[in-house]
Image (spheres, rainbow over the protein chains, first blue to last red):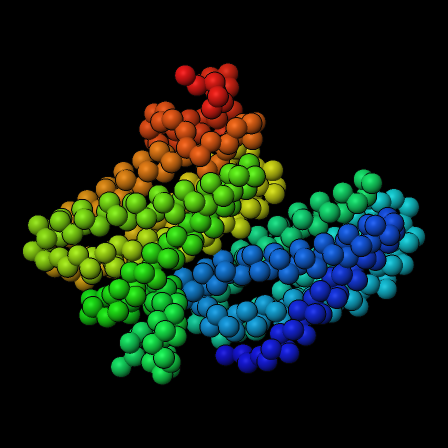
Length: 171
Length: 253
């Protein structure tokens, strides 16, 4: 079972918020100061919010399938995955600024934003998978539960993000 | 021997802490170790704590599902549905338990109301956990623009899947009892539960309000049966409508 101190949990969530906030601000900067602030707040809220909203479903599904880690371990690994996604987003922020600053249309900015967030979140999921289910008694069942959860969570998250980007681009 | 059956360390906590942790462990056991849960119920361990924990779980999980359904229309409907669905679930449990107790006593010669109540609530709490786990799927469908009828059918499918999980636990309950009358007892409980649950949910509807409704009623007048309504939804989802448009609540006599 993973051990995580309170400071460790805070650090991971801080990375998630900072990385996503920076990415949101970079995307919004192309559209104006107000958009930068709005997206800088929306993106971290969506990232952490969707994970928090769907984590119980992941635990319930995994536990019912007989492959779940302990609840605290699951939360700790999800937090770490969010932190890793935030780190990736922070790392991609400089190139995102360059690409959005030189983009001719807001549609391109939206596409770039979705791609960066998608890459970061998928990488976060990729490293979270072995941490969560590396010791699972049935890898096939664990993969099915984790994949289903990932697809649904990604879908909800991207709907929120796309809506926020479209709203700011339309101003 | 651990009182919760799952984590001996819980026995070292004080009574209140143990009660809270024991309640969570009892609920967690439904997912991870259902046989152990049934062992504990058979032994009569912490029945009162289990009944409370399972009832609270049923309320919380069905409230989550209700709020999800209500979010299709938004506004007050989120609160209304979050209140009504737990009522449906608890009332169904209240109707099924006496039927189960009576039928078991008659068919198998033995029935302890407290144990049967714990077993019924355990099965329904498991259904509540499973149905709440499908709530993100409904949210995704709504986010992708699923219409009223498609969302209705998806809801039925989600509830059906959760019901299958609960039925599997119910089957384990029956397999632990005497063999005589087992199938009849199982069929009876399924029929009573289905009738009570669907009629209660139909009576306390709506949960998924039609988007064009201006008014958001807490409950609507009864219009036909639940089965007829599912058939209408199948046709509507396929574009086959039996009337120009559904009457709004304020247009009904």
